[in-house]
Amino acid sequence: MKKKIILGIIFSFLVIGGAIGFFIYKDENTLVNGFMTKKQLREDYEFVWDFIENYYPYKNVCTRNGVDLAVLKKQYKKLLFEAKNEYEYKMFYYALLVNLTDYKMMGHLILDLRENSGGYTSLWEKGFIKPIISEEASSQVVFAVNTENKYFQFNIQEADRSSDIRFYRDYLEGYPKFKFSEKNIEDKKLFNSLLYETTIIEPRKKPMMFNGKIWILIGRKTASAAEIFALFMKNTKLISNDRIIPVTLIGKQTRGVYTGYNRAFLKLPNSGLVIQSDMGYGLNSDGSCITEDGIKPDIEVEELYALRDCMNLIKEEETK
Image (tube, rainbow, N blue to C red; front, top):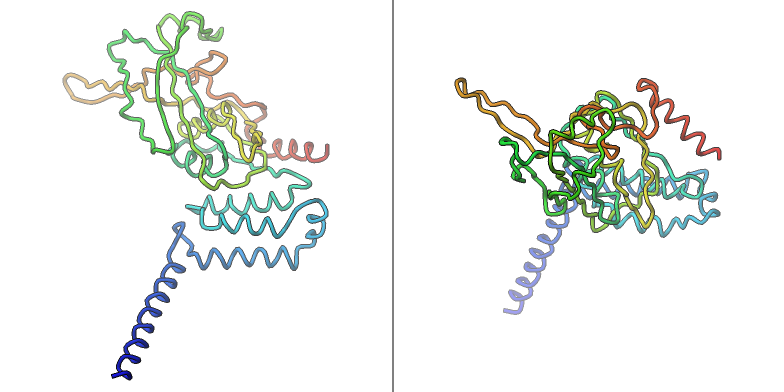
């Protein structure tokens, strides 16, 4: 009888142990960001730190200048499984290496949008802005509208956002005092109200430690979602670890295909063909029309040589 009990207990332990082992194995080999498992992420991380601790020629230079390697390694190990996609994974190592060498330079991130004609705003909202900010980021775009126009409708049905990216619209006071630019001053007579669209992006619970500067290359082919991103970066104060992230737009003005959520759909009476038109007149901060003038760069250079000129500006900063 005792022998059966002992065998039963041993068998139970074997079953439980096997089950635990199976779940641990399954957890370690489950994709966590769409292309890598926890085991692979951990192995890569140890590989990088093996190089830093044993083969990196500037290791002592880093420590002499105040970089605590043990603390840095521990901090980023906690963030290892936070990356949700390949882009965030690359940004994880970018931020790590910037912090490793932060004693000498902040690091520079160049985003080339010169050939980017658009896509989905959620890609940069969730994949780029959200991981690098430590405080809420918000941006406001102003539109001139005519509330008496029979095709204008105030609605928000098309605004598709998640709970961590809030979006809302409302009217602004003071349309008579709002100044249009000299070029489009006559257009002011076509409208009677100002409408603003606000996007608010919440940071992740464990944001990356981004200490660099962002350079955005723009041009006449930069449009739609890429253009919305350029305007967001131009107008928004991004904060990471109690520090404002410097952002500079360089190149030529964008294409001017900024679409808001003020659309009208015209159904032709005989054919039934539906034509879509924006009813909101997007305005830059200087009163110019976004559709006409696009988003203007902070530093205007020839679009073809924007990357070269950007690199030269970075070199000038680093030699100061």
